[in-house]
Length: 278
Picture 1 (cartoon, rainbow, N blue to C red):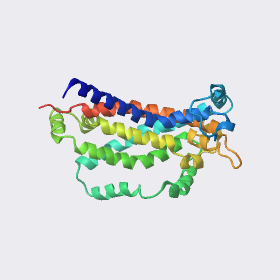
Picture 2: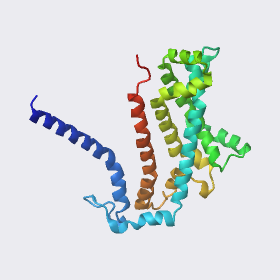
Picture 3: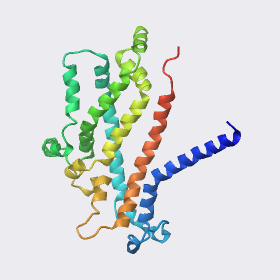
């Protein structure tokens, strides 16, 4: 293979990567352009490709006249709480399903699967009644608990599959050295399943960040609204401020994208790291 051919191949690979990046980032760019487009030009033909910087006041208005910062803070608290609590509650059941043999193990696994067969909307009424008795309505903690209940079964099976791939010899060697079962899980198993932990974090975070039905039902105070509910409140019967919706939607999208890109680094690092050398 000649040098010229190698250069052309390298250039084509770079062009393909740039094309994929452009396709992936175009929806975000289009939201940005639409948010800065005057209402009279939203449906113009041909559509506007470049933003109109004179309309940048829409972002100042989003923070001045609309409690977007409060909505985003609430969503961040719900998503972070759901992520931490879901992973914390799923680790040990996943380890038990992977390593132990006990009566009812199959039934337990089936029960986790069965929780995913019911749509979330069917459980809103009974959950509302239970949360009302427990004084968990109009609280962010209540939403964290509800979202965690839907995330834990999925994360448990995800981590169980990852733990299945960890050699049992590593744990046996640690037990000979005097390590406790809890210590084995926390200090040995979890670092070895880091990619799956990152994937579990993504699942739990996005479930808490994007959830709408429970938040709309359980939260009636505007100060406690997450961004998903606040964004939907712009849709009216007679008119919808499209450029405002796109501005707030962009502010709502960017933190989730940043979180995914941040966690993706650890997914790649965990995949390339070797656990045993021999």
